[in-house]
Image 1 (cartoon, rainbow over the protein chains, first blue to last red):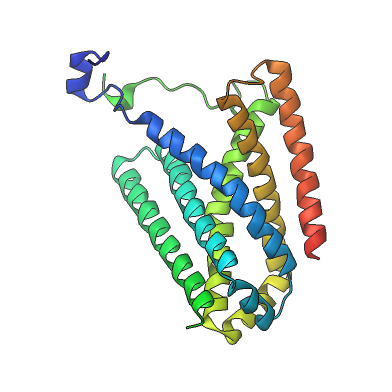
Image 2: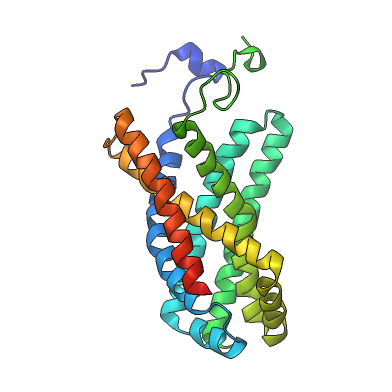
Length: 126
Length: 128
């Protein structure tokens, strides 16, 4: 049973019923980020100013590569959710808003794929 | 009433509301998030791709990161990360229903400011 006024549903002005999903996803990805960024930051600081051999050797460890891929997934998911809200709040031209939302989703997906492939290439030594 | 004619509430940082820590930290959390989305995350991606591409690309990117603009971007990224981290922790605490009285909100706001400055200095100090 819905608490929504049937007229509001027909006019498309009620809640979509999916509001909590975005909110939950943002929080869960934030929690994953708190853990994975702490770890990657630790490794990152140790690699500040490191030469190519040291950096590539560090990134060839499966644990490091796994954490980088986990973080990349959480980062670009969180980025997509966050930028979506910013665009929805401030862009009031419907067509531009739609295009930007599609672009952000697409860019985040591509960015994650590139991160994962680069991390895999480093760990597999291809 | 069509969507475009609906009344809008005045923006929180405009002339209609008092300038206060709650609204300033709220917009700063958003700005640091956007900054990391547009600058920091793509930069990390570039670093990973450069490392995977080989020595030449990695050396070129390292040289840029060691320059003035590179250092500025790194410093801004580290501060944005620290601030957004503490801002996010505040949100998670509120989501649990805790610390929602105004004095607590002000206290956690100042803690977030102090904490993010300290964490930035520690990370930047350790990386030097």
